[in-house]
Image (cartoon, rainbow, N blue to C red; front, side):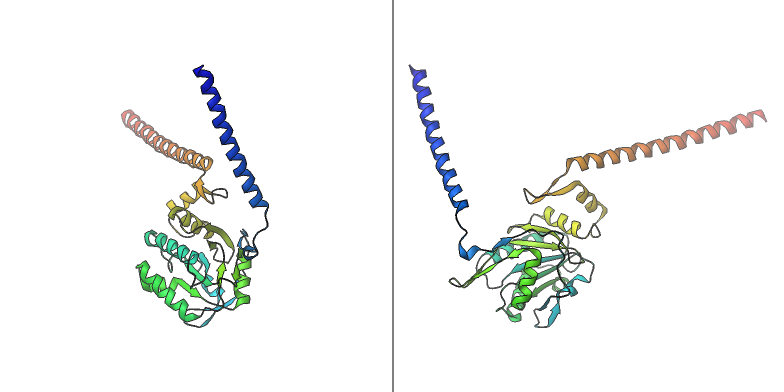
Length: 291
C-alpha cells in the first residue's frame, strides 16, 4: 500500500511540474510572438563581421573640439577598439566603460602602444567639453602611463548623420526615447583591424582578458604580441554560441604533434651527428694504426 501511495504522490508532483513548465513555455512563446515595443524597434546589434567601416568619410570632433577624421586613428597600424556610448548615460554606458576599465587595469598591453581606443558619443547634443571631462576621468582612473594612454584613448562627439553612418557600419542599432529623454541601445565593444574592417564584437559589460587579447591578436593578424601570444591565438577560436573564445582541441593536438615531431627531429639530428662524428673518429684511429 505504501508503494502505491508513493507512486501516486510522484505522479501528482510530476503533473504539477509539467503544468508549471507548460505555463512557462506558453508565456515565453506569447512574449516572443508579441510585437516588439516601439521604443525598442531598431535597437540591438547586427553582426557585420568583415564589414569595412568608411573611416575616411567620417568626421567628428575630438575632446579639444578639433575636427578629426576617423581615419587618423587607423594610421598607426594597430587594431582599434570602438565603443559607442553617450557620456551622460545614467546606466548601461557607465557599466560598459567601467567594465572595460577594469579589464584595462589588469591588462598587460596599453592603449597608445599596442592598440587604440575610440569612444564615440551617439548623442549629437553632447559636446567636446563633456568628452574632455570623461577622458580625464577615465585616464586618471586607469592610473597607468597617463601620457601614453592620452595619446591612445580618444573621446569623440559628432553630428547625427556621422554618428548614424558609423553605427550602421558596425551594426549598432539605437533609438532615442522622447518620453525618458534617454537612448535605448545595447552594449558591446567593436574590434577593428588597422584598415578599418570589423573583426570582432565583444558583448556585455565585462570583458575577460583572454577574450580581449585574442580579439586584438585576431584583428592585428598576429602582428602585436609575442610568439607565445600567436600560439595562443592558434589554439583558440571564436565560439559564436558562447560569444567568446574557446580552446580548439584539434588545433591543440596539431600543435602538440608538430612540437613532438620537432623534438624527435631535433633529437635524431643530434644523434646522427654524434654517430657520424664517432664513425669518423674510429676511421681516423684505424688509419693511424695502419701507419
